[in-house]
Image (cartoon, rainbow over all chains, first blue to last red):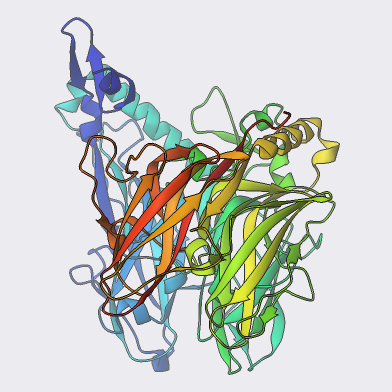
Length: 343
Length: 294
């Protein structure tokens, strides 16, 4: 019972009755998934068709968070979806061989979540290994995330895509009776809505795919934009052959490696991205230089994506920042099969 | 992830972020490779390379958390630290790379971070097992500090971590002797793992490379107690597929198992494979130094 008392966030200890009592508010935070909106007539049962590459068409549809309240009394909070991971399925080409790009744009905040369309297999996973967003994407009521998809090669494909996460619904009539818990949940929702004003997940890639002749190398610039600090925490790549790469700050020439690592020894994909031991913060006016070398000996097409988040806030000093310095390893963390979202 | 917090939050308004911590610019992810011109280490067939250094610049120290490998054939790796003039081995014998190195998005996570700086260098030597010339790219990934000397708080933390590393370092054990355990069809073979005289060893991960399946029991030689069954149970072998992972996904013990310095583990292996089985074991963990100052 002591364990329950101390650790379980779903219960509190009622001293008077000497028994655990569940927090009612946790019934109003639901595991949930958002797929393509069925309000789009082009979406049938969550399936969307991306035209063939030869057609040269960009297909767009959207994710939409619905609105719900009790008689409109929602205190300007509505219902909020906290997206924690991204998954997709390609039922035509198969998910493992999917060849199309994705560009996500948050319409409400008018923010692109990617600097350039990213290869789908560098940003979205599947149910067993979903692509974890270390910064949750907060989607308020009636907000829309547009997905623009372009086929790289081959014929039209039928695709599904889902954000997995949490749905907050504080307006259930029964829940309104639990006033303190209702207030606690509203405070949490307000915090999420505050946070989304200054932070959003972001995927950074090159301006189009990298194309190398056999055995050649070239430099490419990754431009996160000047509007916010960019914090990268992982990378993923899809390519037609093995390659070596290095990364540096294009302005300060700060390098992140003393040579070139290869795709084989250090570069994952969306299912298992290469998680950085510590995130790399790139200030707003800086850019990455990606130096790539083909190792396949044949022509190589490479899609390289850095996962991260944009932080719309200035740099500041923090006096006590070093109090907790350590990079957790097995010695000081419990086993996790997938990385947890960044707090 | 990093413990230097990135976000500075408003204490009065939950969720409101007011700034980005400037100290985050001083800690960067870093990939450390064998020094140029030996980013690619070429090992002749059935031979060993000289020890290759992975030298860190003077700019700042690094904590290594992952190993990755790309090689054209099977090989073994021997790791050691060169600390000033004195070398310190990080394993009792060369270990198969696929047991302690991952690749792609599944690198091997070290049981404990390894602290290196400009005076304390990781060295790696490779031995080919493939019978052909072997091109090897080895990478150690971790977090590096870039300007700790101008920041007293970071410099103090660096000194603390450096001192801790004299007491505790990642370490790997394989079976004694300089070779794998080779078990014939249907045969049972005993091997020994002897813990060094200068440290306790916390076993934290189990990984291996083997030709096929086998059953294994690991017994503490001094107490007679099986590490697998514990003291209360009958002592019997367990399938290797239930106990040993690989470099990408080593089996992680839920609690470390400490073995005292100088003690021995008896390993009993029974082959279940249809042919001769060649087995490279790797017990990963940390070495905790004893009697450091006499």
